[in-house]
Structure formats: C-alpha cells, structure tokens
Length: 129
Length: 346
Image (cartoon, rainbow over all chains, first blue to last red; front, side, top):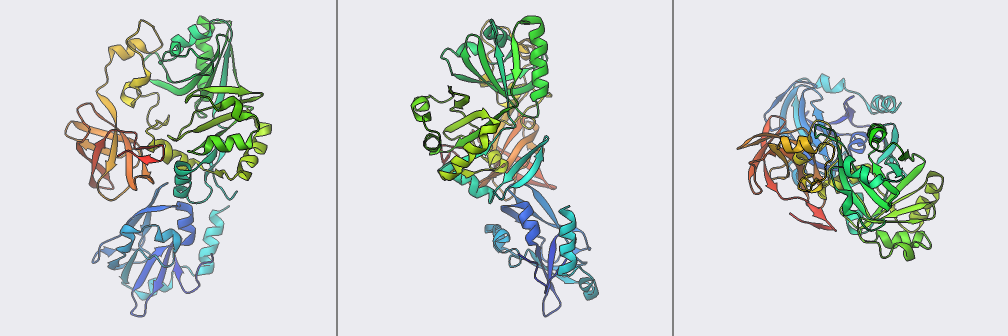
C-alpha cells in the first residue's frame, strides 16, 4: 500500500490530514501498523489537552509491543476516536481511515512543514537498510 | 513464506507469518507448525547415566520407568537458582536424551560436563546442533503428521502424552509448548526442509515465535530468562511441582532450597481494566510489591494476562494493582493455566 499523497507525515510514523476548518486528524501509517502487528489496545489523549510538537500523547499496543504516538505539531486535542476502544484492529485493517485523535494546531505553518508522502517513503526505505 | 524475521540469539527467527492472533487461533482450533530448531538436543550415554541425572536435576528421573517417557525438570545451581529448564527422555538405562533452551545451551553443556567430570567421568555427553526440530501442535496435529510421514502412525499412535519414539533418524515426541496436543519432531537438519514442505502441502500453517509466546503463556508454561533465571529458585517460579524435596535423594540445589523457603511465588493475573500487561511492570498488593515476569494479550480470553512474582500472602481471587505508564490498573489473581485444549479456563 502506498502512502496517500494528500496526507502529511512525521519521521515517527504518524500521518496527518488537514481538515477544511484547519484542524488536523492524526493516525499511524501503514508501515507502523505492519511493524507492530495485531493491535489490541489504544490509549488516546483527552480532548482539551495541550500538546507540544513531538510530545508523547497516545499509546498503541499490539500483542507484541507498546509504541508511543507523538504529537506531530503543537496544539490542542479536540477529539479522540472512541471506536478504537472496542475495535483497535481497525488500525491494522484501515490505517489511513482509523484515526486516533484530532487537534487544532497552534500554527498552520507547522503542518505545512511536515513530510510529504515521498519524503516519508524515503524515511521508511532508510530504516529498512 | 512471508515471514517477519527477527534475530534471536544468533538465529534468524520468524516472529509472525501473517496475523499473530490468527496464528494463535489456528493452533488452538486446528493445527500449526513451528520451526524450533534453535532448541538443543543433548545425549547422555553410558553406564550410570540415571544415577548422574538423579543428582544433576531437581526433578526425579526415577519417575521414568518406561522407555521413551519424558520428564520436565529444572537444573539448579548449588544455591538453588535455575540454570535452565529442560525435558529429559529415558530411552535405555545407558541413554537419556535432554532438550535444553537455545540461549542457555552452551552454558548447560559446560555445567553438565563439569559435574560429570567428578561424578560420572565415563559418561559420553554430546550435543547435536545438527538436529533440527519441528513442532506440530493443535487438535489435528498428530493426524497431519501421520499424513505427512508414512509409517509414523503405526509407531506413534499409541504414544501417551509426554513420551517419545524413534523412527529411523527421526525422534517423535508427544510434547509441546502450547497447551495443545501434538508432536515435537527432531530430525537431521538436511531432512527438515523436505518435512516442513510436506507438512505445508498437507495444509499445516507455519506459526511464528509471537504466537508461540501467547500460546505458552495461556497454557501457563514458564519461559526461561523471563519467568525464571539464575537470580531465582524454582519454588518462587511456579515450579514447585517439579522439585522433589520429600524423598531421600540428594540433588544439586536441594540443601539451598530447604534452607531458604521463598517469600514469593508465581501467580496468574487477568487485567480487569483496559490495557496490556507486560513483563517488568510493578504489581502492588496488600502484602507488598511484586513484578510481572511475562505478560501479553490473550487471544483466547480476549483479555490481557500475565504471570507475576508476588508475595506469598497474595491469594487467588485478590485484586491487585499493576503500574502501567504512571497509572494503577486493577488485575485479578487467578489460578493458571489460562487456556488449554482449545478452551479458556478463566
């Protein structure tokens, strides 16, 4: 599966979708879910929490391991995906649909400065070697 | 086979071929095969081998009276701590076969030879890294092996659990590490690929190390290096049932075990809150702190489970707290195993 070109990415394997109102939706990439394997638990940040860029703010746990999810930019959490409480495997089945949380960025320019799909693929390729 | 590989003590091992949870259910409900060639076979041959093992091992090899019968045992240091856990097969009065863990094999062999040098110098102790091992496990495992290996049914159909039979250069044992029926088959490495491919043609699915770990933990089986090692004894590791302290027999570590009754024991935990129990998480109880030795998500129970070393006062049915990322989550103390023979037991 290729990484959708309409999304932004981080080197720590989060994807970021900019919504019409300027808020962003965050999940983990196809590559990340494949590395972790069967997802069994997701702990998302609560709405209202203020995050600094690169701050640990969520945890995804597979049978194998727990992994931190980092805030892609600074801002305020507006929603967490409660569907993942009962169906964490949605991240395996549809990584770019199963979002983890939404936030309102402090600066739209921070989002624009994230990796594009090509640059993110280069990160994935470099980790494979 | 599309496996995700990982380096495991110098061995390239498959963690999972596809979904680890699917592989787990495959073994509980049908059957699957594991490449466990990293396990090391050690043969002890010569007069007096039984007498030597009676002293070397914490469990009593005198329980082995029928050729082919196997016994699970710990091998202890003089201070009562665990060097390794192993399976010993009685073949003849002049041949016992031992299967030890991969990571400890060289250490084990050196220890066995050092003990033999003074107590049984004429014994021949030889390891067999040239032997591969394939485990086929699950309710349909034996049937599939019989289909894949002509002539094996006649020899192994009447094998009782925890016993083995030779078939030419192959060694077929009705043992395993999953809590399911099945065989572990030792055979020359050069024949292993052919056998593996034949099993695959019969529809046996390959299973990775990831599912092997969730299966063994559900079955309440210890993993050396996690649930016990050279810093603890068998009595605080849930292995009291394998240690015979009542008979007259002396064995390495016995005096230390009698002199130092443990203050902790191994208990089963089921997480009541949402999350996943993992090794090394702290367990808070009314009787003091403990620690998780193995934890995972149980696909059979659809809950997180763990083995934990806790103070002796902790009882089945107690609720304890597990520290996970600065939160205290509730877990219930349960009698384990958690699942065997296709069914959850909690």
